[in-house]
Image (tube, rainbow, N blue to C red; front, side, top):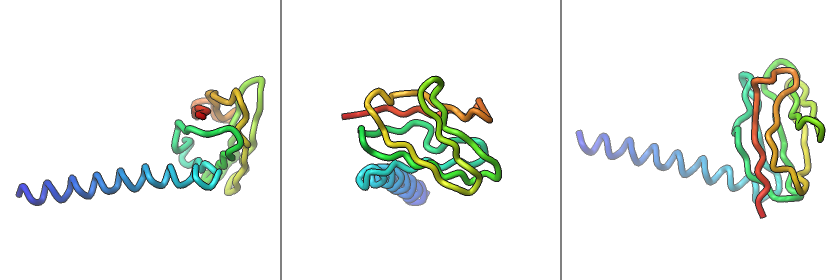
Length: 110
């Protein structure tokens, strides 16, 4: 029984490592991928460098936005992608103007 528990732990740790590695891989090519599905941004919190591109992919059947009140807004049609190039000062919280309960956070790192 102990071997079974150990194997499950190994699988969970390997899965967590793969997820972490895939997040890093997105940043290496200069694009950070955010998925929108079931009225949620995934991942909710991202780290980006100035000049990198954030790409939102809308998997929902209706439009969303990535909106920073008073600064910028990206409209993401259903089934489409949209982008924003990270600028200095883009450490912000953003939301969907159509669904204000949808929230995300961008932290600019050096």
